[in-house]
Image 1 (tube, rainbow, N blue to C red):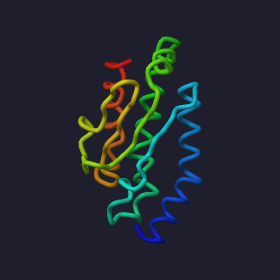
Image 2 (cartoon, rainbow, N blue to C red):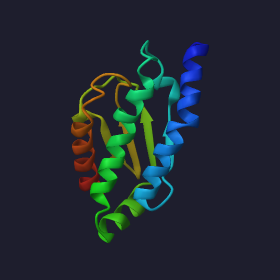
Image 3 (spheres, rainbow, N blue to C red):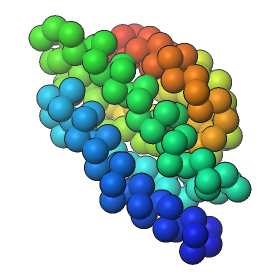
Length: 136
């Protein structure tokens, strides 16, 4: 990762990421621990897309799924009791919503390409809701 890419990541972390994390925490009703492997997200040649793809691929589906789960007190409680951490990475260059999410020992793992199928937010949101409903 060169200087230009480092600047893009730093800007995302300082601006967009904070806003998205606050939105996730507000919906969840607690502070969600996010562990992000920034190096794996930025290991491609699509830095010109990251500002728009990171939110679509990783954060908007979380926001939509958390909204769906927390519509009542039972969902809010289940989310709070079950999720201890969310890990975000791009280690497999996966682009399928159905194989993006896994849940084990309180850790929601998100492993999806940082640039492929970015606009398929609805598919990822539905897949995440299904994973959460099965594991909460």
